[in-house]
Amino acid sequence: MNGQKYHVGQIVHFAEPEVKRGAPRGDHRVERFLPPDAGEYQYRVKGLESGRERVARESQLGGQMAVETLAQSLYEAENATKVPWSQRDRTIRAPWLKEALHQLASPEKV
Image (tube, rainbow, N blue to C red):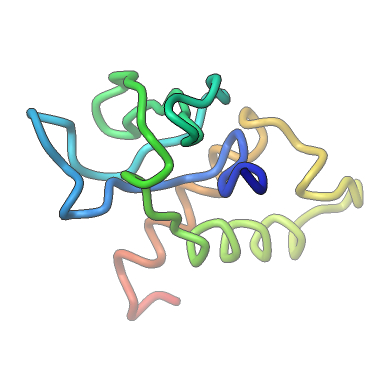
């Protein structure tokens, strides 16, 4: 295995063909890494809307790098402390990710 594709705090979504057995659709945040199962990385993810946590295999997830990238650029544009995005925990990242999701949902505002 080469290493995890996603990182803690990243916003991901379930890839459409892999959503099964009532798994909640929509955006989720990676909460923590779990031990690999059958050679595949697993993550504990939490639904942004529902707050429900579940286990997800890496093959079930698709990253939303556009959201993460936009959130990082918004943060860096307003960051007076010059603390890098990569060193911020999810408490600091959450409002920026929410704003990025909002802007991407309303393309006329971007």
